[in-house]
Structure formats: C-alpha cells, structure tokens
Length: 186
Image (cartoon, rainbow, N blue to C red; front, side):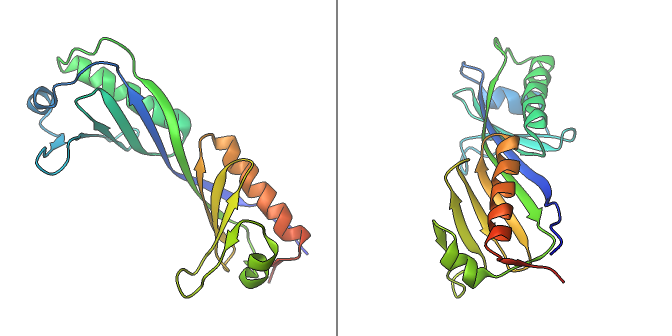
C-alpha cells in the first residue's frame, strides 16, 4: 500500500492586529481613494494590497484583521505594509502593529480515497452526516484543529494558529488513517 506524502497548501491566514490608538477612518478614506468604507453597512474600512494579495479591515479602535495571506510571514508583512502606507499617506500611526495569527486554513490531498463510514466509526471526536454535509468533521485535540475529510482523499484543516500545527495535524491524522486501514489507493 503506497503511502504518499500529503500535499498541503495554505489557503488563508487570518490575523488580528492593533496599533493601540484611535483611527480616523474618514481621513484614511480621503487620503486613500481606493479603500472601501461604507459605515452604514459595516464599521470597518477595507484596505487591499496587491502584494502580498490581502485585505485588511481597519476599525476606529485601531484594531485590524488581515485575511488572504498564504503564510504567517506574509500576513505579518501585509499588516506592516498597511501601517507603512498609512504613514506615507499622512496618517499618524505612533506604534508598530502587534500581529497575532488567529486561524490558518489549509487544503490537503492525501493521494488516496478515504472510507468515510468506517472512519466515522473509528476516529474519536468525529461527526459524519452525509445527508447534511458530504465530509466527515474530525476535531483534533493536539494540535487543536478541525479537519474536514472527504472520500476523495482531500481534507481541509482549520483552526491552527501556527503553520507547523497544520502539518502536525495532517500527518497525525494521515498516520491514523493508514494505521486503521481507512485509506485505499488506486
């Protein structure tokens, strides 16, 4: 039985940040015509970057949420870049943003099929209701992540706060699936 190495792709890193000061979103909108700000619909301003391709929400509290990055490093760089651009555009930002990763979403291909019914009976902390959702939902305790398993051998891992936790989760689960003979290969 050929054990292939899982192919892991980080799809989205969500991080929060704070510059620890009040921000005037109307002033930012005046100085940066490309930002999106509709206070009647949403209290935050959307500041998009082309490189790294991300969207950062900025709130009057000075808190920020960055989405779309493909790595922790890219997420931190995006927030740093937003703060630098704000300063260059005449917005007074006293401190550097303190960035904290909140969630990493990754897609994974195990290279074989998964027996979901058997996996649902075998894996602890799993939920499988195919009439509700085609994937099995598996909650891992260490590292604390949630992995969606599909019969195709594709997975989605969410909830990790560090990239190594994604790899550890996937490798632990893959080993368990192999060990319990829940994988089959064409």
